[in-house]
Image 1 (tube, rainbow, N blue to C red):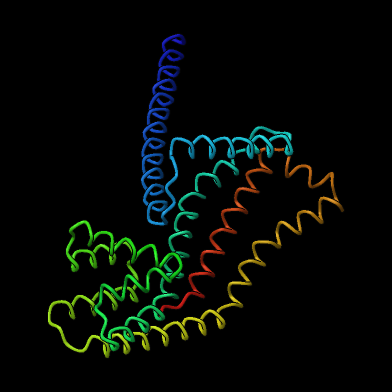
Image 2: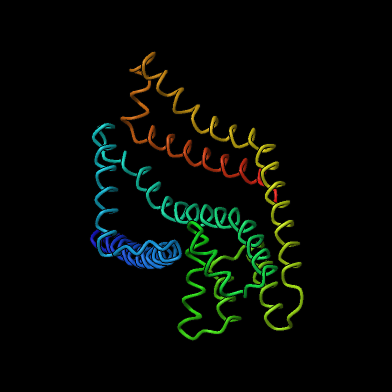
Length: 281
């Protein structure tokens, strides 16, 4: 009877482990495929044509070196668990930050381009010749996006379709205003120069208010950074003052569990403060 109970218990554990390994493998495959697609899409949108076959081993080697360094400093193998969790959460955040920064730079350059385009139209130039001249004098990312628009036209894509592709690549409100104005003017004609000047003034006013909001919410963002840095600074001070007591934090499994909880709560607090301090204009 004891043998049957032991066999049944062992079989249940084996089945649970087998199911857990299969679920982990499927979850990792989904995560890897999603990260590969997002990385390729973000890099292509940023005009960074890197070989994914070379980028993946470099990222894996960097993550492995970081985990081994933390495990060596901590003296325990479970010290890599918080680092592994951070490495899994970092790529989506980094990619989103890259997309947001590029969109912000594009929006900051757009009012000057629209104003210059309105001036060129008043001088008698056409939309596409004026765009070619202005894009050649602009800097990335605006020159990259409008340069791609002009290349798509040269390859036979219609002006409306090229504008829609630009709108898909840059899904911001400022880009939507410019694309709508150019599209309507291309279909119906009319005073495009006046429309573009009005849009340029609107975009400049929007950038001005965005700057004021950034200034007014700077205190909240600084609080999130200070909140994130205080626990690390306090831990360093306590390590110098009470090294024996703090050794339990680095050298025991429950110490690492507490550190993991601290990191999770810190991340939630930072995200919450940044959401509260972010105001849509």
